[in-house]
Length: 191
Image 1 (cartoon, rainbow, N blue to C red):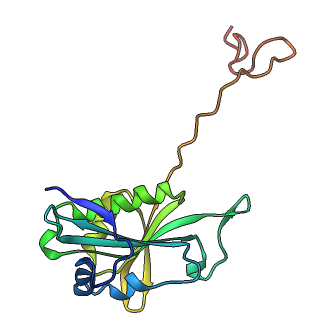
Image 2 (image 1 turned 90 degrees about the vertical axis):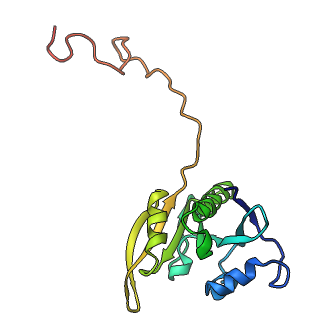
Image 3 (image 1 turned 90 degrees about the horizontal axis):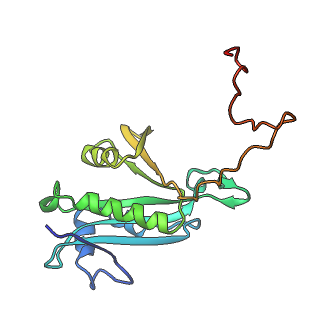
């Protein structure tokens, strides 16, 4: 089955049937939620070849920290950013067919391209399928209690930035003229 994931840009509920799916799955409030610390907002949708929406995922790019009431985490004076998934759903007809995986992978790729340090999301205890999906994708898990839900979890996936390997240079010579990266014979009493 071919799954096409693309960003839903500038559409309204009348323009794209993905909004009907969002409403059906009870995610409208999370798709529309905004906060002052959100740097950008993105809505992805998965479509079948017939252009029917199969699922969606809304994420925001934000500094790490302010959404939990903490100051932004910084490294060398720069705020560390994350992609936080706020809403995610797959139509029941399309579940267990790779749609959710395709959407999550699209968020991971987009977050990396946007220079995010991590992807993070919360999932309530009733969403065991989402928990399994996140774990299969390599997310770390941190249980959290919210209201009466003691089975909910935060999921965090660090995005490792690819840096060139450091250039290895020979260590400086010692006063004896030997390099210090390995012991000479006799240094350990072997000879």
